[in-house]
Length: 626
Image 1: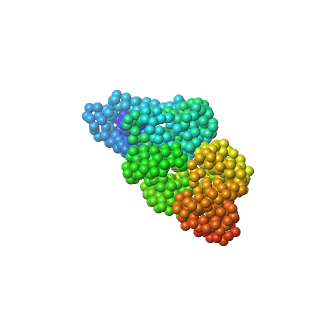
Image 2 (image 1 turned 30 degrees about the vertical axis):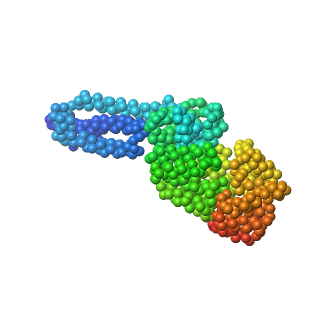
Image 3 (image 1 turned 90 degrees about the horizontal axis):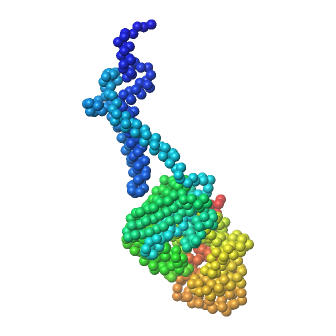
């Protein structure tokens, strides 16, 4: 056995920091980290960093700090951590000598090793306690929160917010708040159903409980709230309810400047997703937080325009919409929604119940939609508008569908354009595809959207029994205001007595739309088919007279449709040719409307069919289906 000098053995005993003499390298490293106080620095730094990040996560939203604040703090703390570890390895704070350079392990002596101070011990213990406490809060802090049944469908309805403002004129902003929250939620793909604003308007003055409403709509969650503007300040209260268990899942009061209404809408939508554990992607979150305009007055004008359209449906004052949208553009020339709204108002003047000739408005509408898309390439209203122009006026159905598909692929849903693509599919004789899309909308929006279109798809599919059943439901749901539409449906079915009854009833009820060419022609068709030839001729003579001075409402097209129905083929082609030259937006119906069956044995029909873009689309679909 080798004899070891006594002094040498003592050296090993008293100096546990000699890495050269200790075979356990890991233990040596650990002891050296402790000697240099690196472990202590790591513990204290980690505790402080954890507290900082937790505090930041809580104050970012209330203080409206930038989205990158938390990421910046993490990167900053990581860099600081590396620097702290390096400095703690090299330097030490000596109780007597201030900051000193740490001696290497082989030079250190027992009496030279700094003794731990009480302040360091306290800091270390406090860091450990804080970290443990925050971890416990994060893990068990949710015990007071209502437990969410993950097996439930992620479906929600947002009840119209109640306007508690002293100014009743704020109703348009209150409704706008509701609509924007719905749109934000609709953008989150993980939601399986978000009830549409149209569906929710029926419950605006309802006495039904949230449980009853949820059951009727088939949703598992209800959001309700209040809106109150006080001077330049805003108070919005929102509460998320589990109606089946009659429990409040989440509630928040927002006290913010009125001009910051955008952040409230976004925060409510994101809080809902968080509270019921709905997965939300980063792009969805970014889209929801995106601010449409920095000018809240410009935003107000667009909300007023939307509110006016909600209240009046197709009876809106186009001049008022044009005025509001124009004022919005003056305040913010970079506001995409304002250009899309002005495009909508402009284009609506040329449709069948409009007050302008399409050939005079389409060019201006096109420029406005293009500008809206230049500012925001995903603006749904502008994409739909471009689809309508290509469908109605350009008769470029391939390009029209491209725009509609961009709208469908875009998760955002807007307030008035949900019918455009299904109408297109019906006009292109694709009833099954239209019905699938309508069904998807019904499931997602939780409404009777759109029974009128669904009936047309069944007629085109020769499913008359289903069509009859849906007509009854349609009339029960909408009643007298839709008698003219019911009459048109019966014309498609060849049920002329029923068509005459509902169209005459609409006329007696003084439904405003009965004065336009579409419904005048329909009533003339019903009269002729039921033997009232003189009454039919009287109506058509007035249409012919109107067509001599104006193309507003497509009188030439509807005159041609009437003559086709009664079998006067030459007269039908004469008026349809005039409608073609006027760029009538009704020409796409040439393909599927039963009124044109009598023309299909005539080569003039197929020539017109080709010139209105149908053959090109047929060839396109044939190539796709190969």
